[in-house]
Length: 68
Image 1 (tube, rainbow, N blue to C red):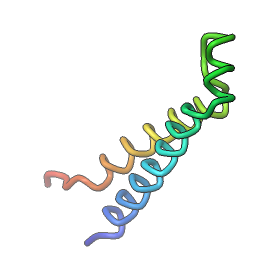
Image 2: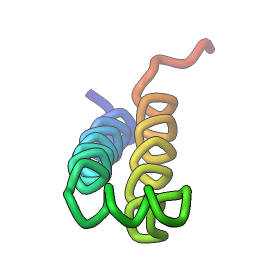
Image 3: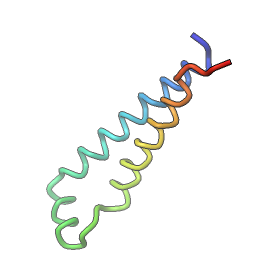
């Protein structure tokens, strides 16, 4: 396994963890009440979800084999 592939896997796993925490935070009662009043999630929750998705996409693209 190349170091770049290992780095990609590590980034994808950390992105999955951030996505999990973001989705878990969006189900919290206070977040649900805030979303009901304002119509959107808090910035903290959105950063977790967006950052997790971005890290997963970047990590998977690094971990995939490249053509030579």
